[in-house]
Length: 170
Image 1 (cartoon, helix red, strand yellow):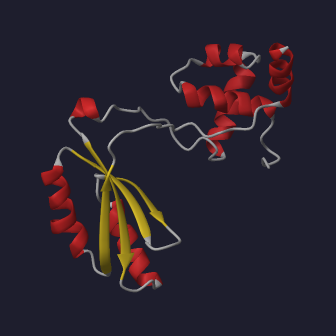
Image 2 (image 1 turned 90 degrees about the horizontal axis):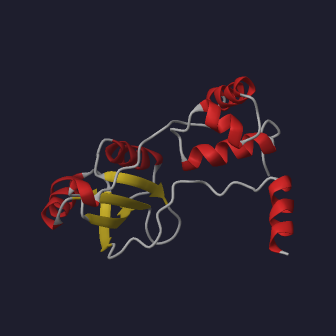
Image 3 (image 1 turned 90 degrees about the vertical axis):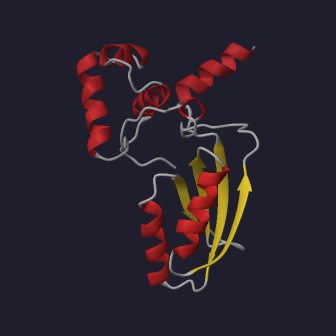
C-alpha cells in the first residue's frame, strides 16, 4: 500500500527517474504528461520527503577490475545489541562491502563484497573480517555469474497504464 502522499503521477515520475536520473526536467515532464514547473515541484517534494534518497551513477565493476563478487555469511558469538552495533559500524567503514543485511536463520549477517581478486578477498577476510570483535563464524560463496542486477524498485503500475496495457494485449 502506498503512502497517501504518492499518487499515480508521482509513480510515473519515480518510474522514469529510476530508469534515467539524468533526464532533463522538460523531458520528464513530457513523459509524465505535466508541464515543466509542476513536474519540477513534484520532484523537489519527493526529494524533500526522502522518497528520492539520492542520485547515483552505476559503474561496471568488471571494467574497473573488480572481478570477484562474494557473498559472505557471518555468525556472531553473541547476538547482543552492542555486538550488532560494533559489527555494523565496521561494515559501514569498508568500501568493499557493497551490501550488508542483518538476517534471520543460520547466519546473523549476509554481506556482499566486491574485490579485484582472490588475494584481496583473503586480505579482507583474514586481516579485517576475522578480527572484528564478536565474529564467530565466516562462510563465503563466490558468485559465478550475475544473472540479474536491478536497482529499480518494483513500483505499482498506475491504473491508467494497467488499463492501457490490457487494451493493448487484445
